[in-house]
Image (cartoon, rainbow, N blue to C red):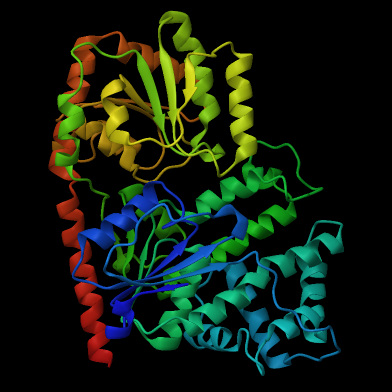
Amino acid sequence: MIGRKAAKENPVADITLLLEGTYPFVRGGVSSWVHQIITGLPQYSFSLVFLGGDRSHYGEHQYELPDNVTHLECHYLMDPLDEAKPSPRKGNRSAFNDQRKLHTQFRQKAPIKKGLMSKIFKDLGRKGGISKEDFLYSQESWKVIGESYSKYCTDPSFIDYFWTIKIMHGPLFRIAEIAQNIPPTRAVHAVSTGYAGLMGAMIQESRGVPYILTEHGIYTKERKIDLSQADWISDVSDKVSTNLNDQLGYIRQLWIRFFESLGRMSYQMADPIISLYLGNQQRQLADGADPARTHIIPNGIDPTRFEGPLAARPEEVPMVMGLVGRVVPIKDIKTFIRAMRSVYEVIPNVEGWIVGPEEEDPTYVTECRELVSSLGLEGHVKFLGFQNVNDILPQLGLMVLTSISEALPLVILEAQAAGLPCLATDVGACRELIEGGTGEDKSLGRSGAVVPIADPEATAREAIRLLLDPPLWKKASEAGLARVKRYYTLDAMFDSYRNIYDTALMASDRKD
């Protein structure tokens, strides 16, 4: 935990940011956005609550905390719970009955009754409610788990089901404790649903402070992708099917429904609920968000920061394809590498640069390096690690994103501001950024190309077309530069959040 002198002078933070697995320990789009918000709105004081998984996955801060950050505390949800010695206990029947009602409403995908949610949050982790000891050892807890297994579970292993429930719900007791003890604040702002979003809902309910929610990607969608591929879930009922839900076993689906339920509680308590583009707003609405409380605020950048890379761009198009991002499965680096093989057959002097941190998933990094070797691309595909993007951009002929999930990637905006055409999969706001959203936006022209997910041949085909057609490349460069300057500036984003924060703080002051 880090406290600052400013915290003593002004103990009540204007905004408490609830951050799950991001800033200030992990670089990337969301963390960059958090840093932009804090530094770009210096009139507000910020308190930071960081939630991580395994403590060993996080090292030193990747960002220097700005002066208007008055407090930082870090919590790791995979740390073992402090468990008392097991002893017989009955458990609070009324509190566990409320849990039954809650889970019934989750299954029906119905809004949670206000009084029930209040009672659930109040009882969680509290003696006389459901303490963690009651959850772990009581007769009532055993009864609820047994009933649910008998009634709903299609997996033959009760042991797997039992321990899944224990592991899944264990962090909620720590979340409840953190929410109860965070320093005074005038408003909270979660940057995802999940555990951070649940904490925001708890704080709003217990303290009555305004709760703002921003989703860059849709958390439940991203967790579904992660969980469908997770090898730490041993699910005997996984089977081959053309439908993702059908092919997932019960335990995987249980995890997915768990995070969907956390998301629904976040949506029910947050106001406003912010997304980056129309597609994600529609997803929020489908998942239960109130249309009256949803807003769209695109990410923004400062185009003047990229005037240097723009001026440094050479006359001829460099035969270099760049992928700037973390080396993790969701970025689908392997499709980029496979596409490079096809491009190499047409453009023998082509290079592919993978620019981003490699610490998050060492196994996947090894697999990617082995794929480069097996395809005979040594010397043509290079892993450069984290770099200053301004140094990299003038050396690229094409920015490539092969992700299977994105929101509104800042790297496309940065590339456009540097006059670099982009090639991206049809995920998130990538199509809007490259082809335009409104009619006026589309009239600017295409700033690159959009391809299907996990399609190395389509990726290679479009890359070759752009790299080998200088007039087409130039038109794409000009369209991207015009688009980012007109629609995606930091000033516009700051104005929107300034209005939201001022509204929240005025509401908080009226309550006091």
